[in-house]
Length: 201
Image 1 (spheres, one colour):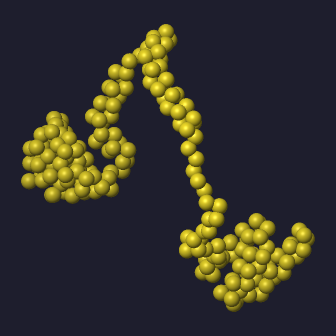
Image 2 (image 1 turned 135 degrees about the horizontal axis):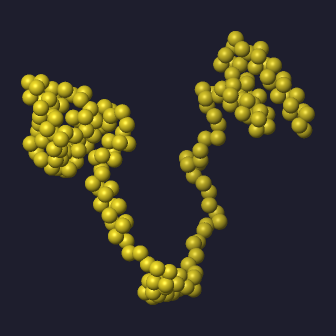
């Protein structure tokens, strides 16, 4: 069995035709016998892509996991499509400097239409009516309070850096309740913040 598989896979490597259904069935048999065979998986994936099989999207993530460099796999699978795109880019007409004036003149009528449309819009000058008595819905307003679970020493230090001393003091009070073993440390921090607050005022 191993020699037969080895010979058939060697033949596939030499004469790979992704549109050949026999090749894809041989590759499927090899993958059933050796599910972690990366090269066979890549060739099988390519044949599924070319044959537009539904199982392509199922096999793609499995092959991507087996592949060391996914960018190479992607280039190899989509190379025909990329070549088509490159050919289209090459076929784009190239103009000399003077030829561009002719091209611009041809599209000038379209430009006139667009300018007329803009002028018409400005002339009509539609306005959006805004009610001055707008009251925001209280359910939509975001909560400005931070939950006690989310308060950390880092957040308290950030408040100090931002010179939001009252929030920093509040954060350290919550932390002292949350971590009673460190309450003396937090009390010292609160005193330092109060001194900072006095010095900055």
